[in-house]
Length: 358
Image (cartoon, rainbow, N blue to C red; front, top):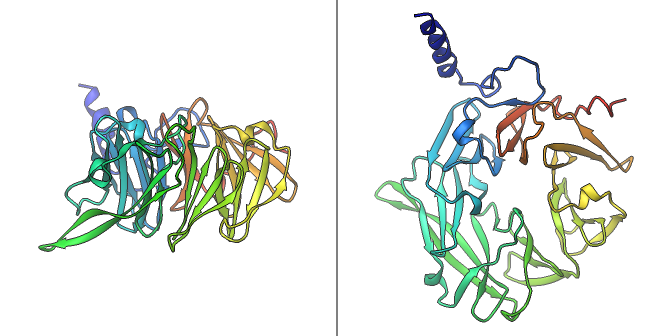
């Protein structure tokens, strides 16, 4: 049959797909952003992606995916409710963690992405706090759980008495007869003392090596490594990101860009009257090699701080794709979307759209 040679060639291509730079979806036309062949179809819904020194971690349909720096691809299937699954940067180069929120059963799931760890860690919130009522999550898909590089997690919640309770959990690794296993322990419980009838809502959590910055609709708090919970600003912040040693954040109410040179203890306005797209709740900021990047829907921009101008980046291949995150890994810039994983070389990803290029 004539179909056999075609199938044989397809199998050879698939099995030889060891290098993520070549493992892309074949197309009839040249595109800038190319789909990764291992993550498509039933695994195309990717709410989040992050990279560390030697791997790219993906939150994929029904589980977690990993692309290693040598091109190997690993997928772990987990029957999770995707809408409430988030994971952050791993605290080591071979162990990452994800978690899923089950609203009905009030569980947290800490999920190892390294196959050496055989099982997930499940935490029943009522075992931590008998007054626990619900997780304090906004209606928007934003990072509202925080994770430090020291494997500490900050979980916002509501109790029967308070609308602003935070649990600081630490995922500890224990040796059990030569097998490393994870265990989640409660380090501290914080209560801001806001009545449960209050309209208190978490809008954003930023996490660094040893502290958290938490924004509600009206205030910004900082949880320091010594356990102090300080009020640092009297308005809402979103899209907190770092460029070198400086933190930046957007204020959607006053439409300003703020900066902090002291790790979030104080903030100063540096730009006002930001364009609406920069303060939109669907816009997400990040920095790649000191470039300020933000994306909304399928579009990507670079903001030039010297010219106080934004340049739209060529998104050929990402049209009509909902971008959920961007990150750099192994010479490529990856775009996770709700329609698959895409990438382009980091040397060309900043090229402007043709209609706006000089």
